[in-house]
Structure formats: structure tokens, C-alpha cells
Length: 296
Ligand SMILES: *Cc1c(COP(=O)(O)O)cnc(C)c1O
Picture 1 (cartoon, rainbow, N blue to C red):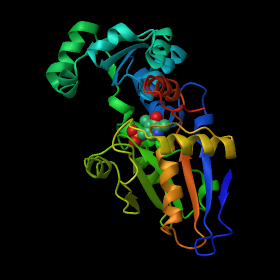
Picture 2 (cartoon, rainbow, N blue to C red):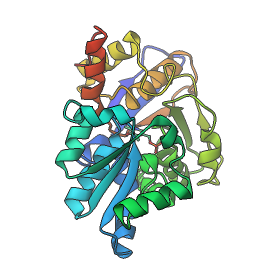
Picture 3 (cartoon, rainbow, N blue to C red):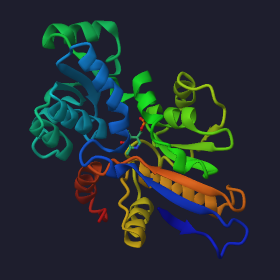
Picture 4 (cartoon, rainbow, N blue to C red):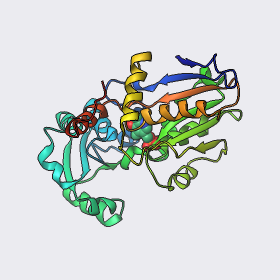
């Protein structure tokens, strides 16, 4: 879908299209569907009946795994960052949704959470919950990347630039692997930190990609009035909702780069809308507490 045609600006003459991955499934949000697909097949093949994964209070991944478990017949266990959330399940839209899908939670402290990939911790989870198929935080592993290689199709070959938001780097890795040599993949990290370059390099060999690190808005899940206003204006203009954690920041970045003349004249840009809309309600709860304007 074409959303932006910059005819007035002769210098750039850029066009932006959106790939609406958020529409591929009503609950397993955009890229999380792609990332889970081959993991669920693998879990079935290995005859697992339980999925265990990790996430924060408003995690799109937690919501997606919970629903996928319900839909495809797995028990699901969510290891959640923040012990205090135990008392907030009902008021937290993501956790109450996951619970309604049958997900069982274990709440751990932020310090414990940092150690979650250690073997000791995994062993202790096995003795607590029995055997499970482990899906990493954010769902990124080689099978997830394989699933994300299916986002781009033949119809997308005409694009010069393909843009996506980044959390753990799985989605962009799939895009990089499936892009054609004339295409450049631009990633917009939704968080601070420079570990992503290395993460992505684990999954890709192509070199046709770049990270633009200027649009995380001071960190993961942080927002400001300007971002919220942009998201609301965007929806007003195009009737396309953006989420505040990932796609809103990416789209803000794309528009800002166009403004700055980053893309060569006549470039065709494809923005991947990776979903994440379930996170809007939780963000609005927080904005309301701070007396800020909400996402409409
Ligand atoms: C999880 C998520 C991302 C980040 O994907 P990674 O593969 O972790 O980089 C981007 N957008 C949305 C909407 C997400 O939910």
C-alpha cells in the first residue's frame, strides 16, 4: 500500500509503501507469527507439548506465544521479568490476555532475569515444570529467522530500501537473507545498545544492511509527546495504526530520513509493519497515569 509520495520535494521524490504484516493474524502479531511458525513445527516434531519462553510486562512475544499455544495445542509457560507483576495480572492487558489463553506464569526479579539463559536456570525450570520446548526472549533463533525469510515475496523485488524495526534482530536477519543484491535493508533499533550488530551477524552473510540508531527515543518502550502525536497523525491520515514501541519509531525515522535527504532521488521504500498493536493499551495505561496525551 502506497502511503507517501513526495512529489513536491523534487530533491527526493521518494515513495514509501507499507507491508501490512500486522494483518496476517488477529492475535499472533506480524513478525511473531513468522518467528513462531518453524519453532512450533519443530516442537511438534520433537513431540513436545509445552512451550516455555521469556518476556516483559507488555511483551508482544508473550501474547503471541500464549495465543499460539492455545491455537496449536501446547501448554505455555511465561517467565516474566518483574516480581511485582504477580499482583498486576488482571490490570495488565498483555498478561491478562496471555492468562486467558492458558499461559502459566513465573515472575522473577530483574536480576534473576539477566541470568535466564544460563544452563543452571534452565535446569531449575525443567525440575519445576518438566520438559519443554524453549523459545528464547523475543523468539529469535535460527528457525525464527527462517520464518522471517518468508516476509518478502516476488512482489517486493521492485523496492530499493526495506525498513524494519528491531528488538532482538531476528526479523531483520530474515529480511537480509531474502533480499536481492540491489536492495538495502535498513533497521531501526527500538532500544539503545550496540549488541545488535553482532546478534544479526550470527544469522546473515549478506552485507546489504545498515542500522540507524537515532530513533529509539531514549530507550526501549520510552516515548515522548512528539512520537505519540506522530502516531496519531499517521493513523488519521492513512487509517494505519502504529505501535509506540516498534513501528511508530521506525516510521518516524523513515519520515525524518526522507526530510534529511537520506534516500536517493526516486527511491522506492518498503516499510515492514511488524504489528505490535496489542501493546497500545498498556502504553496508554502508563501515559494516562502520567497525564500525557494518549494514542487514539
Ligand atoms: C518483536 C517486535 C519487533 C522486533 O523483532 P525482532 O525480531 O526481535 O528484532 C519489531 N516489531 C514488532 C511490532 C515486534 O513485536
